[in-house]
Amino acid sequence: MMDFDEFAKFLAGSDKRVRPELEADAVKIGEIQKRIAVDMIGRENPKWPPLAESTVEEKTHLGYVGHVSATDPLLRVGTLRDSIEIEIEPTPLGVEIVLGSHDRIAVYQELGTSTIPARPFLATATLESMAPAAKILGQTAVDLLVPKGP
Image (cartoon, rainbow, N blue to C red):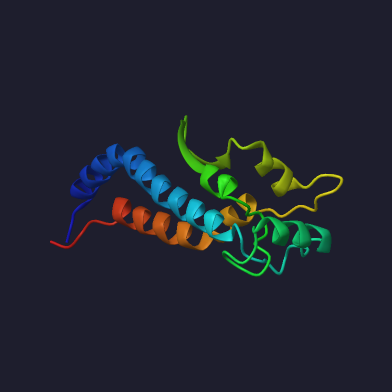
């Protein structure tokens, strides 16, 4: 059993590990978010409105359907899918995960326009990553606050 002084020393060492552990966790969580967002491109989502028939007809004529799903929403040649990236940015209190795309089409698809309904793939990916993020961060908290056995 650890006495108070030993535990205080353990916690002092943990203090130095917090930021590097958070940065490593942010990379893991960001990769999960990116994988989910990339996987959504081309798949019908029951929470999204279906593509307009005219859009399906145009995509069919151009050969842009049937690669991932029947109508391949958000997918034509893969530019949007391939533009998805994560950035890990330090903040005064830790780190921030930024999931996004520099492709302007991402904004139109994510938020919608007057003619395109919103099909949020980035926000959805972030929300769907919360459960794995909680596990990852929870394990890190345990590792930082609970000494390993003798």
